[in-house]
Image (cartoon, rainbow, N blue to C red):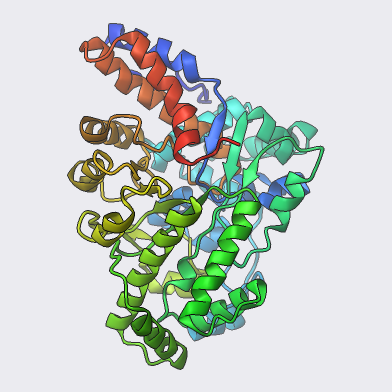
Length: 490
């Protein structure tokens, strides 16, 4: 039996004096409320407040960080609870996917079997942030006392099942226990936000769950689903989206609807940050060509770049904070996408540029006090090369936290070193957990707080800042900075 007891000094410096400083700094923020301004938890989870169905559906299947590493050592996604497209009512992404779903004689895998796969491959996660999150989560949230292993798998699963059946482990009880002050979701402009509105009007729920406006699917005019997406947006907004002008009007209308429902931010994920605007006549021509199915690849790129500029223009008017994360090549493995659809672990990073591509947006809105742009990257060379210098000049630009492939203790340390020289701490976003796995939220924020305490301790020990100043920074990083950056103050 291997005891599961994370060390109290994990992630702190090895030097005893510096470690003592980190301990004191961490103690100042360890129990601070959590602001989660960028994530993917479904608001309906908290509205319905049902018991979680089983440990695997809660802890493993929705967590693409865990899925991709298990898949990388040979565990098929369907053994981890990922269902083929069409098997759960979702539309097939292609004819191949539809044929595959129709031809398959799928047998469902149980939560216990999925949990066993994790336990059998527990050492795959050694040294990764996923292992850190799981150890913290299993120990501090669920009270597990033993490491997962083939021998312990069934006993641990039974303990988790029993724990999840208690009232203390309903979603709302955990929301309060985790001390979540604000939880942001990610939502399509055509979403009715019914769950968000119901939560706001529910006198039995004191938490704050806010939507985030994500319009990516309306930017890619060469995708086969684009016309249907326009129709849905038009039906919800009551505006004819068959024209470019109509699309912009519908997006503005839905942004206002989101803001009225509590949204403070938008989110945009594109391949590159190109933002050259088009003349209205040219944009209308490309819009019409896309609806006819005659748009070239170059024209589709020009249309997307223009749409990014237009979203920035809207942000400069309505004040919704614009989050931008280019540089991710989506669905790299076509057979996996055809069978299982998006968000199944095979999105991969590419080298990314910001300074030149964002010139049109920053030329026109970079000093606009209403406009705010938070830049994220999965290309960490961009932190010191482009993002920090941009945030160090433009009042509108903030350096987004390391996320996805970079939200590890080492990645956070490199981010602080790369960003602080040019942009300091004030022009950063606060930690971003970016998770669909609800119970991992406190573990992820704890990792960030410990990592930042270690970095600040290094500044104190080298006499670059006083310990009093470091305490102030540590507190601001988990409170004032995310609240101010994402305009979360009510």
